[in-house]
Image (cartoon, rainbow, N blue to C red; front, side, top):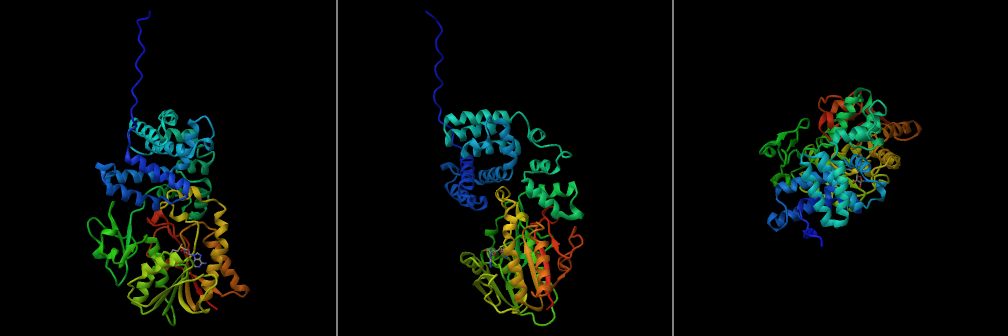
Length: 479
Ligand SMILES: C[S@@+](CC[C@H](N)C(=O)[O-])C[C@H]1O[C@@H](n2cnc3c(N)ncnc32)[C@H](O)[C@@H]1O
């Protein structure tokens, strides 16, 4: 008889529940399954978990910051992580169940994009997999993550990305986690002055940084000084901007709660201010914001208009967004009205307004740093998809302004097909019987910003100006 005894089976151990990873996973699932936006899904999840508190399986402030970084970082670099994970599984990625892929991406981000030690990244992800996927699939997750630990991010990029000289766009796409077509479009948009390798790399890297929170002190309603609490600093360019320090909470400020100040990117402030600053001959009493929702620029224009005795009409096609505009203008010290209206079928007589802002719907390629998943959802077909609406809105904005008045055409995309091409086309229609207009040098209506190029339009950039990549063309109606 053998004296060898069978080793006793390892006792079953319940998986450890880590509230940070579980919450991050839930947020990724919502983004994936429901096409939700991370910046909308995450705050309520975090709020609930913080109310519970760490003792009851919820989160404290540091946990919440880690969960945010895990979700944003994983989503932002999704394309790169997919390419790496694809090297580590023995079947096409589309055959891996989406929840498994989310867990793998979360693990890949911890291993390759954070300072979390490798063993902790693997074990916490495997524990997460045991909780949300079950023990069988957790084994698969463990095996894949162990393969990923073979290299750091640079090592993996050397494997999955072609050398720059062989294929610059694909190289940058993988290295900076942008779809190739967006790298290509941004590179074109940078124009001759900025489209060096260093320029595009700086832009792509800036898209991967979390933007700081910027406030606007609505003129006549709040002052920059009253917002400069703690480590907050004045803005770089806008006289009404305040930059909050990391972790600063806008909701803690009275002026923000009372609507006298708001959260607004400095680029958005600059384009609204530029439109308001253009010198006009003749009356200057009727202003229109033709695409006002959710109302950030309308609130700034409303405050400026009030200071000059002008009236603002804020129009928005979607009723629920028009309600947001009304909320953001509430308490405006001067006369204003908010209407639900289609800017392509205007409810106002031609030539009614002295200044018109038309901040058109667009791909949002200039605000990728705010919406981590957006770059992977957009497709090249979206760009021509917006074209008829952008042209229609600009055409009607020109019809709405009086001769001598001014229109500001704005996008939060730098894509040439959404910016210059739209303006060129609509201006060209002037010769065929449409309202005639000419470009004004928009650079003269903004502070002396670096890298504005030959103009006359203004293109702002995250890597040069710390703003979203907003585009502004100013057009004066001539006939
Ligand atoms: C880029 S957003 C404007 C952002 C806004 N100016 C701000 O600063 O908060 C474009 C807005 O245009 C609205 N919109 C889309 N089609 C429209 C139309 N035909 N007429 C008026 N508004 C429209 C969208 O619902 C969206 O709210």
